[in-house]
Length: 578
Figure 1: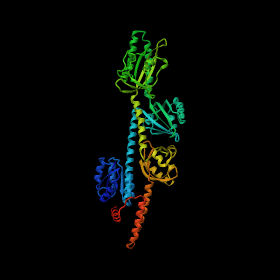
Figure 2: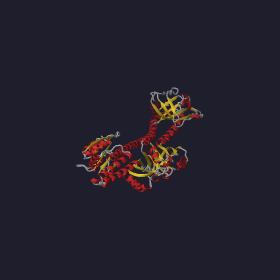
Figure 3: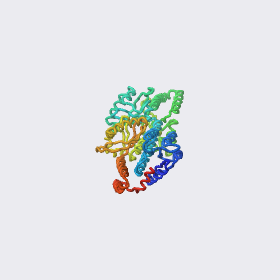
């Protein structure tokens, strides 16, 4: 239900509005003759939309609009004004009004148009607010997780980066040419990245690590990237993760492990060396933020650090056979882990080394965690395996964040596909890069064919000039509402209403509806009004002719679809009030 308030100093008009909007089960209408009362109610967030007359004592409609927008209130606003106030309409639209409607004519079509505007403006406002909330959540999630996503348009050669990707790469804009991005790649990574990007264009995905130099400060960044080809949209898309800190820690850990191995091998030399080596080893284990433990040749745990205990809790104990009383499964295959597939069955076998194994684990207290595993066999002087080092990294937060990003993208698609209006997304050059099912139905085009077109291809030639003007207005003000003519795939011309906004990444989002029948009705009603005005010029001797003509017109209106009408006296009274 839409809660609307209509302010007008003419009480008869408020009564008419109630009479004609009372039967609309989507609109709950409140009215007032005092614009200051309307302002107070709106600022308390009691309403979804406000409809205002222009000329009112004490505060006109433009001032009411300014007061609302000054309070940073974005409630949809419709200016309901008299004829001959074009300059007022232009000023209202420039100051944040969503629509305007001129008074005059027959009440039924007038207020039907007003009801349509109310529903359209509120739907547009709600969709825009939902989209902004979703994008804000996505930005925060990417920042927290150190992730970013991107999309490469094969036709334009431009890469569009998300907020997280912009932060990781040190970019000053969300769009960058693929050649410019390749220049950021370090020499040792350039060849393999170029090959992977070429494979991506040919329909193959890639999963690799490479290095770049940040655009802003030339700092070295190590990235893990995964990408796939969307054959329908003709784009490549993927995610990147800054793994610089992880790789640094791994290299440091490898160095420390080498030192530890050497120290362990020298432990038999003398007691003092053993004590010093053990102290050094335990100090390193204590300070490493990744879980580390040692197993003997039988797979029994002989040493672990605090980070390991934080990961696994009390589920494992020193000196026991592995003791892993947990349920777990490999990700993403979700294959359960058998008891002999834990470290006891792998760590001490040279041909079963584990690298970067991701598990979903159910701990003894019932909680879930995501853990990555590595195993490193330890050789004695004879080259035999005398034990193993096992490394565990808790990646629960990062994994859940990635899953949340995927879920947000799915939710965004659900919102767009659920609306009955055509939703189009175009890039800065005008190419259509996304469209929902209603948009395809509106223009009778298959989705893949629409995604190969620009807005110039679907607009009628007589609307192109105005479209260029509206596009510039959209880039300046951030939103527009226009009427235009569009061409369906079958060659039929339809009238459309387009409400568009500029998205933070520079793309253009448009909500489109077919108003062909409304435009036809407007034209037909104008013709009837002209005939009625002509008939009323007759004198009293021609009244009989006037009445017959009027009955013929009313019968014509019935044929057109008008089910009810007022008698002559009521019609004259309503015309006087309007």
